[in-house]
Image (tube, rainbow, N blue to C red):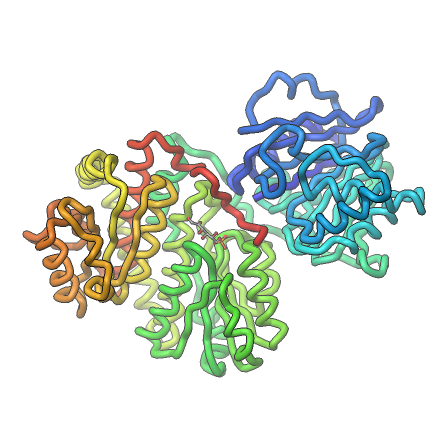
Length: 595
Ligand code: F6R
C-alpha cells in the first residue's frame, strides 16, 4: 500500500525520488506524486496510473530536496487531485501520508467550523488543515506538526516538506518509516529496499518518533512527538545482497520468483542449530505456541503449525492475525507466537502481536523484509532471505517460510541436519526441473490447462493432511491472478456438503502425496469423477482417474513444499491466457499496512 520516499542531498532529488518510488511500486498503488523544493517554491506533479517516463518529469526543476508518494486509494477515488503530496492553502508546505486517519470525519467537521476549505476527498487533507490550524497559535512548523500528529487516531506516517526547502519532517506511528544515511544525504522511506541501492546505513524509527532534518548543516534530529524530547539513535547495517530488483530477462517478476524458489528455499534454512537454540528453548518452555499471519502468510503459518504438531509433537494453534478476538482472553506470559510475514508490515499481524505482547506473550518471527516492524518487535527474529518479492502474489516467500518452519520442527527433534539436507535435495530437484526439457514439456501442459480453464468460472482444489494448507494457498494464488473462483477444501469436507457443487466438467485439482492419505485422496477423486468432474492430479505418480496429470517432485519429509509450485504456474499461465497482469493483479496491494 502507500509508499513514502523523501530525499535531501547533493543529487538531483527528482531522479532519486522517482527511482525510489519505482522501488516501492511492488507495494501496490494507483496514483503517485512528487514535490520538489527550489528557490521558486515547491513544484508538485501528480499522476494516476504507473510511474512512467513522462515529459513532465523532465520539466521538474533541479532540486536537492523533495518528497514522493505512491497512493493506494482508501478514502476518495483514484484521481490526480486525491493523489499526494497535498499543498497547504498558502502553499507553504506539502504533506504525504501512509495510513488511515480513523477520526478524520470528526476532525474534518471541527475544521470546517473553523473555516478550513477542503478540496479533496482524502483523510490526508485533514492532516494538512490540522497543521494549518495549529499554525494559528505558533509560527513554528515543527511544533504545529507535533501538535497535529497527536490528535490523529489510527496508524499514520507522514512526511512534510516546507517551501523553504531547508528542512524535511516526518513522523511515524504504525505505518513503516526508515531512514537511510549516506555522506551528505538522507533518505526517508517506507522500506529499506527503496534506498538499498544508495546506502546500507539505516536508522529505524519507533512509533511516535519524529524526524527533523536540516539541509544547511546536514543535521538529523529525532524527537518523541508526545513529549518533544530529543532521542538518541543508532545506525544499523542492512544485508545488501537482498536489494536487487532487476527482472533479469524474464517476462514478469512472478515467473522469475517462481524459478528462484530453487535457491530461496535453501536460503531460508541457513540457520545453524546454535542460531535456533534460543527459540527452541522458548518453545520447549512455553505453555502454548501459536502461529499467526494473514493471507498467504496465514496459510504458511498454518503449514508451520502442522509441521510443529506432526513432526515435533508440539501443541500449536494457527491463528489468523485479523481474527484473534477470543484468544485475547487467554494469551498469557508463558505463551509464544511465531509470526509469519513477507513484508513485516501487515497491519493486522502487527496489531495481533501488539495485543499479545501486552499480555506478556513472547514473539518470534519469520519475515522477508529486513528491518521491518514485525522483525523489530520480535524477541526471536529470523529472516527468510528470499530477496525482494516484487510480484504482488507471494510465491517464493511462502515456500521459504514453510521451509524454515520445517527446519524448526525437525530441529526440535534433533533432526536439524536431515532437514537441511532434504531442503537441499529438493532445491536440486527444482533446479533440474526448471533447467531441463521436463519444464518445457510441463510448460505445454500448463498452457493447455490454461486454455481449458479459461472459459470456466468455478474450480475446486482438494488436499488433506500435509496438503490441506497447500490446497488453500493454491486456490488463493490462482484467484489472485485469474480473478476466477477457486476454492480449496480438505478432501474430508467433500461428502459433508461440497460435493453438491460438482457437476459435469467441473474442474477439480487434487493434490496427492504418497502418504497415509493417498487412499482417502484417491477415493475423493473417484467420487468427484463419478459425478463428471474434470480432474487434474498433482502427484508424483499418474493415475487412471486423472484427466490431466501434473508430475511433482517427491520428498519423504516435506512433499507439501513441492506441491504448491504447479499452482503458482497454473496461476501464471492462466492469468496470461486471460490477459491479466500477473505482477499487479487488480485491487491488491503487496504490503497491507492499513486495516
Ligand atoms: C497473497 C499475499 C497476501 C499476503 C498477506 C500478508 O499472495 O501475498 O495474502 O500474504 O497480505 O502479507 P505479509 O506476508 O506481508 O504479512
